[in-house]
Image (tube, rainbow over all chains, first blue to last red; front, side, top):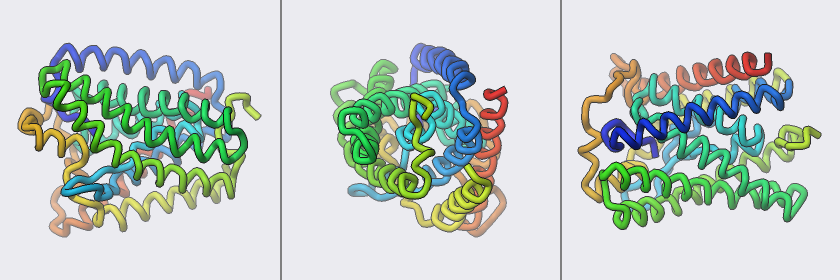
Length: 212
Length: 93
């Protein structure tokens, strides 16, 4: 799901870059107020873990693979702002060091995965968590939000491709959504496994906006 | 987070990146597959605007493909850890 150079028109990649720079700046400002001591190493650990797991493409259907996005996973532990920054760091290193995703498209990739995937995913997760409550709410919220965040990110990616004139919306939107409905299942399984493990050993690491 | 937990989690990430990544599916991912099927893949096959030192998670100059991928994975995991940790320390100040 990392857009390479050449897929996006200049107006699309420039505007998504501007939105993403502003968005990351906002997240950093917010984080400086709410970042707690125990979250500092967790930021490093989660970023490293998500980078490593993103390398592990799993097969989904006929000749297609998918990999973890990790946006919801990061936000469940670090909150929406921390999650967005973690994804931005992972995407930047992947782009600059490993040629995964184009430099022109990095703004759009951050938009799709940091803001839609992680922050948007957090909003979905947190709503479900509040309705259901307790650990059950955390796990069901993680499952639904992980799956939906991947689908939503792919929808935004499709819209950007359509605006760029790369592929017509009626073609690229259903194609992207369909394949990511499947990839999202993998996303939900991995995220729930990790979150349920953390709930068992260190439940205090689950992000709580009240700071408890 | 205790030091023990940090070290264990990083170690686990490094093991995934080194030992498991060479076995990852090499099939195209979601976007790549759609681009291939819908005929716009070649639009992305231009020369990238910036050339990365370790393209495609393969350490250059190493013949053994699994080792080249695993090494890139270890390097990437550590660098991402360092950058994110460093950023968090600076943000907290």
